[in-house]
Length: 370
Figure (spheres, rainbow, N blue to C red):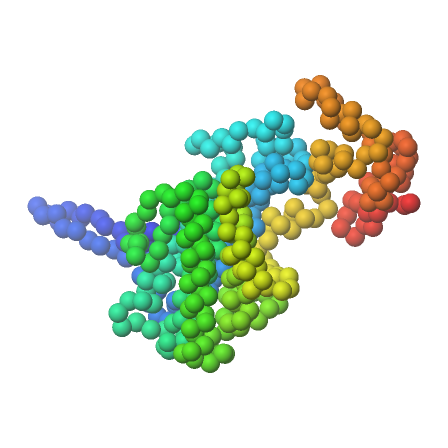
């Protein structure tokens, strides 16, 4: 795990005193551990409330991100840059996914796994603490709000792990701090994610029977957004994630056929009805280092010739794609009436119509002249 808070920080040392050996346990106050972080209601809510940002940062907050590899492999973009191991994945046929120790793509491949498993572990530890005998955050409603948010985090993190990896452990509140758990396949991990989101919805709904609407509204710092997450809005968001993860787990035609599409449609209809945004910040979080770089005006955004070539009306793309893979050259000259692409019969005409220099900065017009 990435953080000492998951592992604990008790240090045992054997100290020789004369002819006797005695054990001295030293607690390092500068190294956080789960017990210390979960002492008071305020500590728990502050700790728990920071972990949606952690989930988001695991996905989008670093240049070491697997999404770059996934995007080139799915033809969403084309680039030979080595950033994010894009260049290693852009070839046809696709390169194998080398997951051996020390491989060059290890930072990209492991980031989401480490972060999201940390989120699952922390959320489960919080649930265990809240459910411990005699403990309360102050009121039943406050307890239920925190439990709803913790289960929501478990659902998000497990859902992300299921749609990304082959297997992971399904940790819950019954696990001890250092208990690693057994690996489960992605289908079972997905089921656990959906169950956690169901439980989040149940806790949030029950909260309104124990306290006021204000008491049950999620703290604005927990889910930084232009939306105020009342119980109704929080439940909508949870349903939307349920629909997303239920669909995303399918990797083969057989798995797609096995998806409960009736349940998925129902969840989507109960979900959000407007765009969900995250208010990102380099200081307050969640961060968006990867997303802001990838979506910006840069060489990440080259169009894949396999896809953009379908707009060609000259026959050049059809001739290029018909060749054996090894015989295809790196380029073909296409023509299209699609105004989003350069116009002209020759390469020179197209370069005049759409000047690359007009796209050099974020404030450039970057549009065809015709």
